[in-house]
Every structure is written in structure tokens, then in C-alpha cells.
Image (cartoon, rainbow over all chains, first blue to last red):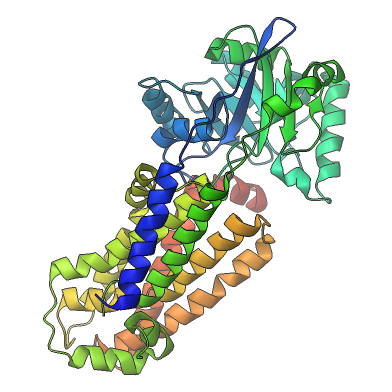
Length: 289
Length: 194
């Protein structure tokens, strides 16, 4: 084995070793407000096999790494990945995994959380929402901006349980007004609608970049679904302000720091850089002369 | 110091392939598998790094296993193309090994994109992202054509045909996967009004 190849391999092993040693799971002190437990959740998560980068059975630990208490795995028009993730999570302790899907229709995208079977995507949004409710789940408008939300008529807006008020696409100045317009339009027909924060996690991460804070009566799937259905949620992206009903935002603002996502350590960042550099070097030198 | 083989082949594919097929290497199925395994390590580790922003061993290994379907598909497409060349001067396993040495453009593109996402966190505009696919696409087409001319011993016309077939299958597999997992059918139905 040539010198550069051996060096690249050693650096790769060192990077993965550092990444393994620094793979800590942050512990967050429980937050309680107004008699409710506050949970951090991400309800728009794609997994492998699908357009997500991480296998569903690895997502529970990933959720723990980023300080989430609950996630929903929501691949496009299928619930298999969600069921796999939930099955795996039930065999170990850690964040809850809920089964879901992103119902990807012709003129709407809709997150279904707490369902078992895929919902027919080729129907009007209001009918899809009714199907989600029939399975005991909750329906959340996904990234409601041009191209994904034209199918929400008045009936659909009135039936929604939640909408993504905090989403990474909101960072784009041109898209933020579209989110706000949809939020206001929905509030006018559905004042109790839950403001949800979701990362829409695929492969470019990070999971939980945008997240929801839920005020739950109990730490269970039923408790989470009930909190969304009753609108006891706020959404937040990174360090931005919380979005949601003003009385809930006021309740949670004092706990802003306690609820913030954990910061990456320098050693964790260094391990990413070391591994990336070694991969570039290995790709160039190849596995063999 | 001579350039590494993969880089040399990416920069001068025809000359490098000529040198390689002149070497007295028989090639084996085991050797034909270690190059795809290497690609799986690059892709699986890189995707895990970007998606999880952590690189613990267990997560990296699972990423490699999951994403190994990419080189497996490339390998199968390679077998189909190689099987069409009857008068090739080297064995099928050796051909597969030679084909995979030309993976550098796609490996580098993957790593550059993932490096941008991971370390700058600035998403590229979608048109730029799509346009950037042309760089490894065109580069690889040149390498595959040189492979067909030398390792498969094809005439220029036959090499063009096999290169086109190879690239068509690769892109069809890529877009087929994207369409399948992202619910793109609904969008197509909307646009076509079907």
C-alpha cells in the first residue's frame, strides 16, 4: 500500500474513532409548564429507503443526539419506513418514533402522523385529511408554499390539524411570505390549528433544525397526537423566534434556552472535517495502484 | 512522483486504459467487487457525515451497507454493457474493475456537494445543483467511451453506442429512483393533466 493511501486510511480511521468517542447523547432537564410536559418533536423526517439518508432503525439514536423526544418518519406515499423505525424503537429506550407519511398529491403535500396504512394520494386534500383522521392520525400541511399548497381549499384548511409554520424553506426571503400568507389564511378558517416546526429532513440535515414544542398530558403517541389535534404546539427554527399561538409562545419563551437544540462540540466538528478530507484523499488515490 | 492511477485515468482515460489492458493481470471476481465496495465506502460514509453530522462507527457502517445499492446497480449495468462486447481483449471481471477505476468524477462530485452542505450549510440553488451534474456526467461519458474503445475493443461507432446505452441506463436508474421515492409521479400527473 502506498504512503499517501496508507495515510488517508489512517486519517479516516482516526476521524471515525474520534466521531465514535464524541458520540454523546445530550441529556435535557424536563420542562413542565402549566401542568403539561414540554416535548421537542420533528414530524417531517424522511428515511432510507426513500429520499432520506439514514436508515429508519438508526433514527431513534439520531433523534436523541439532537435533543428530540419524538419524531415521525414520513416518507413519500408509504408508511413502511415509519413502521420499521417504530418497530426498532420499541426494542430500546429513547425518543418515540411515530409512523407517518408525506402524502404527496397532485396539488398538495400533507404530513400524516400516527397512521398505519398509506393514504390514497390521488384525491382532493380534504378527502386525504378525512382518511388520516379515520385512522386516528393528525394531518399537517407540509411546506405550504407555491407548488405544494394549491390543493388546500376552504374545507381542507378547516380540517387541518396543523401546518408547518417553521420550516427550513422559511429561511429564504422569497418563500417566507408564502408561509405567512398560508398561515394567516388557515388561521382565519381554523383558529386552533397547530403551528408545527419541522426540519423536512432528507440527507443534508440536520434533523431537528426546525422543531415543534408540544405541551402534552402524557409522554406517549396518544399524548403527542392529542397535543397536535388540540393545537398545543409552537414551532421554531434554530435561533429564530417561536411561532404559534401567542399565549403558548409566552408560556414557552422563559424556557427558550432549556429547549434549545444541543450545540455541536469542537471535537465533533473536527471529526467531520477529518473524515471528509480523508475521503477526498482516498477517492483520488484509489484503493489500489 | 507519479499521479495516482484513478486520477491519471480520469485525466487521460484512453492512454491509461491502454496501459492497463497491456498489463498481465487476469482479473478475478473478487477483485471486480473490491472497487464497488470502495465506492460504497465513499458514498455511505459521505452521506452519513452529511445527514447525521456525526460519524460514529456503527452509523457509518450502516450507511455504507444501505448505500451500497448504488455501486451494485452500477456494477449490474456494467455487466450488461460488457456482455455486449464479444471481442474484448480482457476478461469480464477485469473489465468491471477497469470500469470502476473511472468512478473518480462522481466520487469527487458527491464529496464536494456534501462538503458544501456540511461545512457551509448554505444550500445551493436547485438549478446550480442540477447544472453541476453535467460536470461528472460529461467527464464520465468521456471515460466510458475510452473504456469501450480500449478495454472492450470496440470500433468508434460501437463504442459510441455502448457508451450511450451505459449512460442511458445509469441516468434512468438515477431518475427512476428519485421519481419513485419522492412521489414525483404526482407532479408529473399534475403537469400532464392525466
